[in-house]
Amino acid sequence: MILGILGGAIAILIALIIIGSALFFTAAVPVLMDSEFYGEEYNNYDSIDFNVEKSFGFVIAFVTSYGGGVLLSGILGLTGGLLVPKHNVLAAVLMLLGSAITLILFYYGIIPFLLMLLGGIFALVTDNNAPAKPTFDPNFE
Image (cartoon, rainbow, N blue to C red; front, side, top):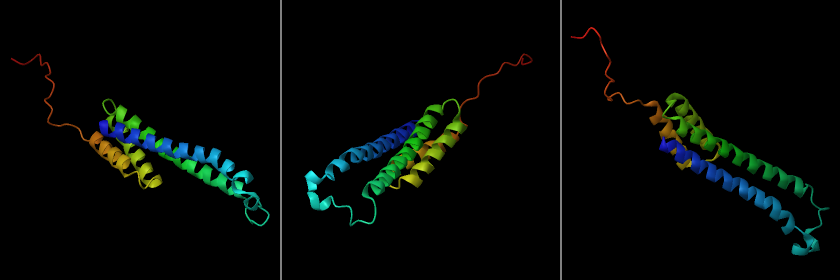
């Protein structure tokens, strides 16, 4: 339970950092590319074959969607961690799915991946050594 919650929270934190940095560069780069900052020689886009603003917008859109995917995996892991006491199989599926998304999208997110993976595996394991609940047998003498 706690492994899924920790893995999901760490993945959400990483996703917010990714999305926040993309939003920061969306606001900062056009100001930095201004002619007053660099001078007029860097503001001449006539000799450039590609459009800087369009390519920059594509990169920002890619990074933001990438952060959104990591955010989705964090939400899956966190939800799975919270569902373990009542629905352990559903919780395990959510945590394992979140760990797979984290590994695919964010290679350096090995810590959230491992936490959600172990949480999903442990959610499937039931305690067979627990004492059985006593039942009432009316024919017992």
